[in-house]
Length: 112
Length: 107
Image (cartoon, rainbow over the protein chains, first blue to last red):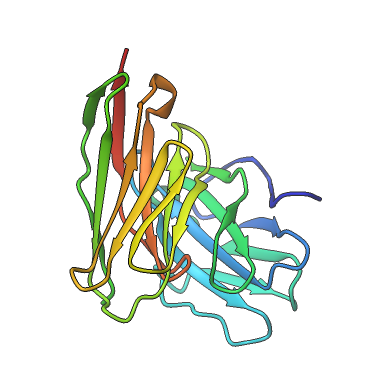
């Protein structure tokens, strides 16, 4: 596709359930980022993938959060045992190396 | 700890005025700087990138960079109500974002 695609666009889950969020970057973009944005707040960096290098996981808030990316393709962000404080919009962005970012529309997660 | 600081606002300017948005950063080795605009309920979109000291102009937008002062700014000339949004400053690609400044342009 022409842009960054994220799915699902909306997810409502119960506390304690696991969720998976998917990001399909722009073709040819080697860098992929995940962010969390709580209501009315700024972007919180979670994880960064660059090609086949080891990901920068420094922003992951707890071991309940993990992400994978195979090569330069799709990435999946997994949140285990969800908590109410995980409710937020999860944004994915891709870029050519560490340059200008192109964002997806986000996945809105609501944990009841 | 790399940090990017922005005044959260809101910054209110009348229509037609110049809006000035400011950003400071802590990592003196930073080489790339970006401004993004985020409308309420939408994702951020890139407005400007700047890599060298000085000014860079694109239409009504001018980015200014001063590496010695670790300061980057965005000027919006002839502000329009459609410019009302949150403006995010980013340093070194996507690794560090400021919390954003909310701009309100009053008609």
